[in-house]
Amino acid sequence: MTAIEVQLMERLKKLPPGRVAEVVDFVEFLAVREERAAAAQRLSDGLARLDALNLPQVSEDEVEAEIQAGRQARRSQPSHGA
Image (tube, rainbow, N blue to C red; front, side, top):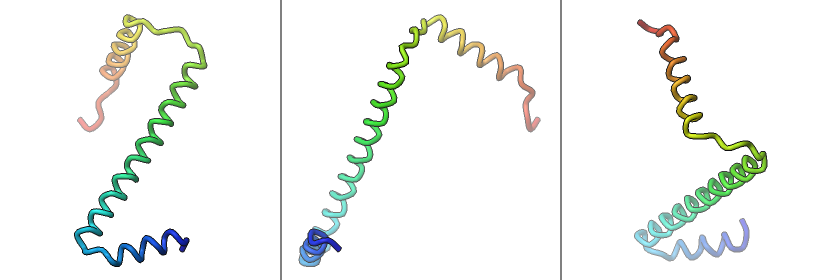
């Protein structure tokens, strides 16, 4: 264990159970915040890579045509389990 871990453990041992629960909640909050920050960074990096491709913009009509084509393809597939 590192010195800070030992120090934290010693301090935790001196706290009443209710305060220890608060510390656990706070540590969990910090962990979630770090996970969200990491996810946001990955998303930002991905968007930057996508932007760097300099692909032409897609119009709303093209998006709608893709959606309709996908729906039509699903409708034309034989259903399983019937």
